[in-house]
Length: 87
Image (cartoon, rainbow, N blue to C red):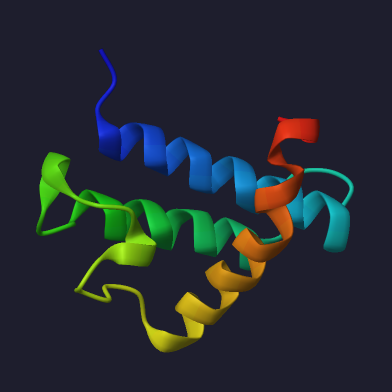
């Protein structure tokens, strides 16, 4: 059985991979996107709400640094509508 945190971590990684493939590199993730995948995974693992967390958009605690939050917001804005087609 997969936990909510694991599922969200995989979803965020898939969104970042889709974004990177279309904007940065044809092969594996670029260094900037690899760093973001790692950072997002670490933030999810350290979530103070654990398995009872809401979605990050509705969360009262902002655990991402402002610069990283802007990056992930841009990635989600691009990848979200395209996830059904590509993933």
